[in-house]
Image (cartoon, rainbow, N blue to C red; front, side, top):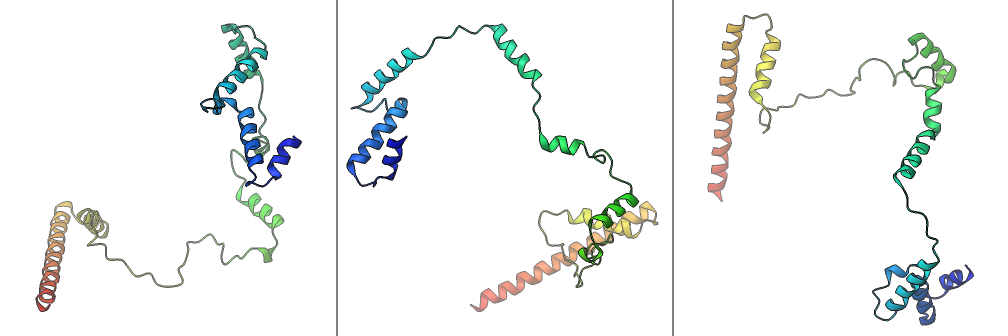
Length: 195
């Protein structure tokens, strides 16, 4: 260990220590450097000699593999988080609202929670949100959205009359869109002609 520490502390520019680092890397992992033209044959020999010292074990049988699996089945792995969570008496069903309120009152003082910020009602925006015109968005089924809105506004109207109203409104929207596209095209033509 002292040799490694000594080599690690040495200057990276020192050629002796560079050589020592390379040799140490080759000794530690000879299989990575056995293609080296100078050291490769010696590293292969090192691996052969080291393999001779590895004790030969008996060949594994199918029963040995089954035994390992059975042993692993018997071992229970502990998971602290699951064990703690499983002891929670409300893991399957939350506490009753009154009990939850009491738990909250015990856990936090009144001045720790901003009741105005955390209320059960819906979020009220601080400014008015302007409606967005989605009529020119590509990829949206404008006809379907329009039909759905018309049905929602006139749910008390007979189906035949509703279909007539839908078709008329869609026709008016399409003609307005066509007129708008034509106007934009004319303006662009005028601007291009002035140049």
